[in-house]
Image (cartoon, rainbow, N blue to C red; front, side, top):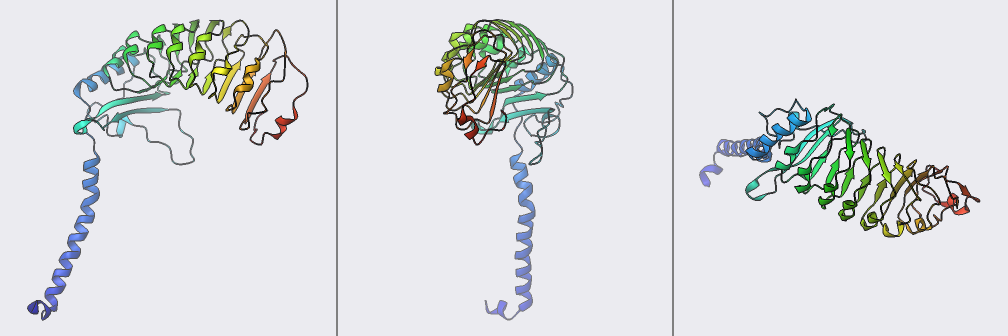
Length: 324
C-alpha cells in the first residue's frame, strides 16, 4: 500500500481502469438484456401449421425466415402511442413463453382488416395452445370448422366477414370461451341450444345476421354474461323475460331484432347496466322500464318501443348519462 501511496500516477491508472470497466458493463448490459429477451422459436410443427393457416386464409405476407414470437417484422403490428386510437388494421401473432425450459407456443392470432378472402382454417387445430383468434373485418367465407371444437379458445372474433349457413352447434363445445363475436355475417337459422353450455361466456355478439326463431331460454345459463348484442336479426315472439339470470350484465343491445313488446319487468334487476339499447318493438306496449337502480347508466336508447306514460324524474339524476 505504501508504494501505491507514493505513486499518484499508479492510483490514477487504477481508478481509470475501474471507470472503464464500469462503462463497459453499462454499455454491454442493454445488449445482454436484449439477447436474453429474444425468445426461442415455437416448435417446428407450429410453424408448419402457420404455413397451412396462411394458405387457407389467403394470408401472403408472413415471413417464415423470422421468429413468429419475437414481436417484430411481419408477425407484429406495434401498438399505437398513448392517446392515439388503435388502428383497424392489425397483423400480429403472440406467443406464451412461460412453459418449462423457456419453450414458446403460439397463443394468439390477430388479423384485422387484412383483406383476407379465404376460409376459416381447419389447420388452426394444430395450434393446441391458442387462446385468442381475431379475424375481424375481412372477406372470409364458408363456416366455422368442426375441428375448432377441440380447441380451448377464450376469445373468438370473426365479425365483419361473409360467413354463412347455420351457426354450428359444436361451438357450444368450446366451453372455455369468454368472448364470442359472430356479428355482421350471413349466418341464418336459430341460435343452437348448445350455446347454453357456454357458461364462462362474458361477451356474446350476434347482431346483423339472419337469425330466426324465438329467443332461446337456455341462454339464461350464461350467468357470467356482461355484454349481449343481438340487434338486426329476424327473431320472433315476445322479448325474452330472462334478465333475472344475468345479474352481471353491463351492456344490452336489442335493436330491430324482430321481437315484440312489452319490455319485460325483470329488466329492473340489472343493476350493473351501463348501456341499454332497445328499439322497434311492435305489439303490446309497456310503461317506461324501471331503471332507478342503474346508477352508472351512461347510454340509454328506447326507440319505437310503444312506451306510454311520462319519463320518470330519476332519469335526469343519472349523473353519468351521455346519450338519451
